[in-house]
Length: 311
Image (cartoon, rainbow, N blue to C red; front, side, top):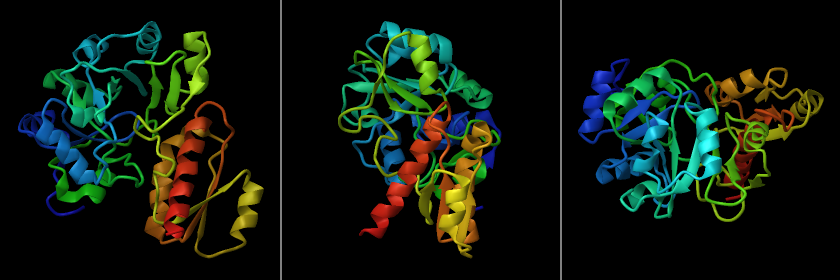
């Protein structure tokens, strides 16, 4: 663990840091977030500096309860109300029309804001006691593999983060689903812990896939990248053929259990880097349920490696 990293389970300690404008690594059911007071512009800007994140890439505001949405959004459209009622607390982010007093630093200067109520009990208590919103992207360097344990946060950020609230391993392991509720029909901007099929069933109407420029986290074409090159395979047989008995290759295939695949995905990518392998061959799951999110993350990890190799 890097020197200077403070890791613990004290909500009191985390609150002290947040209230003085510091940064706290927080556990959620999806991945660990790098949290700051969403009303403190200096603290929010420190998130961007710490991660090396582009200033126009918006953040998600985490709140304790759906009743607090009105502090951040102008309204809650009918589709958003249905989704919030069914999925919060949980791995769903709603993109809504922002209130004028929401910081531009949080929204990337856009007229929308992403809001969610996380399901992790430790962070739920933290948010309730904090009494406001926490802006929190994933607690890692921008574009790299997301953290799903407190140790990942400490390893990636070291003493750049003031405190890491250790809530154990994240049970879902991939980021929240993002639904843009400012459009008709709503658009799914990022697949995640709530499946596309669940969203469609809840709304009882068509949804659209994302269109236009990136306007929410996770929409860039290359992201979630380990140091190793990621190659995609459609089956275990194809993965073995691609590996060809190579000594510096790791095959990742958990297609028999998509819940496990999502939960362990980022740990698998990190393990490859720890082992020093040069290539990860990842078997794509079916495009259904959690498979949508897993395929999305793997495709972006592969694209990130290709972009690096093309430089």
